[in-house]
Length: 370
Image (tube, rainbow, N blue to C red; front, top):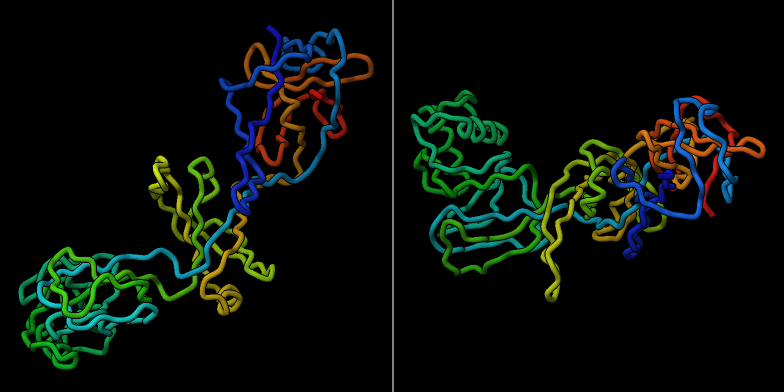
């Protein structure tokens, strides 16, 4: 059985301004078969051990030394990052709501129920119970830390809600116009990771509200780029990886991937739902903030790099053949004869593959199909 040249997998059709620079993936059990090129598997590990081919390959290419980069450029959306929903934990009537675009910081009113404010605090987890003297837990520490940041004192920031904490809470309640009970009722505080920008409002003043009702959506206040990738491109998106964002006017800035999540695209008009990878890139460096400041919303290009190999030997992916004893090789052409030489493969990128092994050097001629 003759070895089969490995064909580079077909690239998906370009959508919009998407510019995939690599869609090559090889596995030993998934080598595409193709006829028309005579090939003999190498019997050993060196180039001289292979039998000379009955005929030379139809075309050749030189082994070249270069830098390979596994890259992908995708469309992105410049805005304020993903939206999160504020859900009521209180029961009553909505008496005041913010407007879309409003920015709200720690200690400020997010919305109002029965004339009393629901106050924004910073934290990674929502509240889930009332806080009163004797309550203990990490939620107490989270609330007390916020209270201290707002300038209230006389208590220790820890996991114990004490009488001293209750005194500080009464002072805070007096300042925000809430009943001075010393108890932080469930639903009086809404937590977010930082300052928020109101994206949209789901209700109107005068509507009844109950636990579980969606009140509004909010985002962060900083600028961010979001990108949706196919699941096949998930390797491109690793938290902390560096990307290049090209803004309108061809101005490019460097940023880092902050968050990678899996989302379901429901599809349109009877289309099947699709699983996507949503990438969030906050433009929080000084240069990036300045470059994006003049745009409220914009379409941008984001260049991802999943791998980079400098100063390596490469051949076209099509030059690879599957060897009978396993692994891959290339057909090395020397004068009027050729033989199959096993190679170790490395990074695949842009139609090329990194190779190494005995008998492989810069300038070596290898066979490729027409």
